[in-house]
Image 1: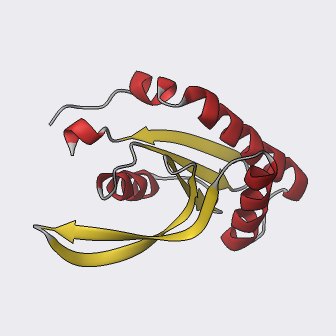
Image 2: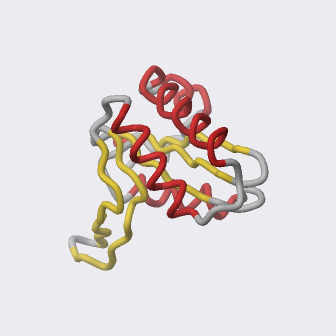
Image 3: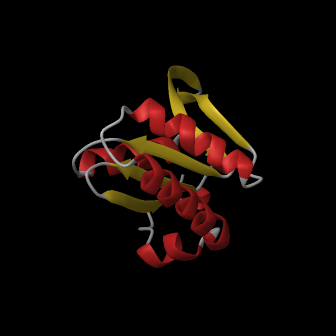
Length: 134
């Protein structure tokens, strides 16, 4: 399998993701840290809508194995049908959080995800999994 590079993630939908990240920081500056993830999700969803994005919150995604439905997960927010947002409200992001988002991308035709942490300090990670590698 071809390894995706960080430079791929930096340029895929860059203008759109820069605007999403700006909305994330606006919500973080307004609310600070300490709330449950759901509060941040609701606030970010409203902010993204206000900025003209087409968003779906708590969007179900089906996971298939060998042509069979084997599970479902709920994406926190899908933006414009092409960017998956995985939100956290933890003290620090770890590799498990990144792996979770990458697996979600593998299960869909979406190639770009943003891992956004509303922890004691805001954190953003861009993750890609190109469709040609699925």
